[in-house]
Length: 297
Image (cartoon, rainbow, N blue to C red; front, top):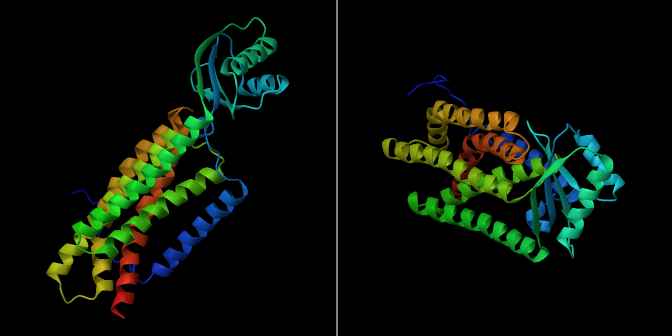
């Protein structure tokens, strides 16, 4: 195996409270943002109208915002990189989707006379559908976490290991949610898919370290737990960094060059991948040590 990092001897267990403190600070910032700003739910969850148009002549996003403001329309506007196209999202309950869409078109025609456009998409999500999608998204996240804790508990014959793995996952998901709230990014079904991907990716990395811990328990049955955890994590540091840098490189390219359509997805994956790498080495294994020590006492 290629070793990007040589043999390390980091005292992860000894630094566990510093790791816990750092995570607590990041999570607290997310809680404050979520309390003050809330979650910027997308059209999938709130319901509303979406209209996507492409102009023949160049139009700046600032001009589109002004056109909607002059038309008395409060909308979320998204541009598409490499194309002179914009999507206009009007959230909230509406009686007539075509009436809202026609108001948007009239605003464009008034602001940009002579600039022909093509209507590429007209969509509407009702409030009932939006609420149902929100419930299903939350259910999917909770069910995935519950399934992971059962899987890890059975695989390693220890519910403490399963709970520690899920707490690390919850840490990654919450850090990502906090980052989305702080940056005021819209959360839609695509972002929910990113959160589920982060959960699956993070637990995979955690299981690799747990497997190494289990192997070392068999090889060194008398080794103290803290020393065993440090040995196991240090033995997998190179593998963890190489794997995660590969993922981060792809996600970073998507974030920078992928365009606005998948920018929120790429951002969530970028933050989640970083948080997942950190929590695998600094949170999950340290929680096992903390709980195992308490149970022994």
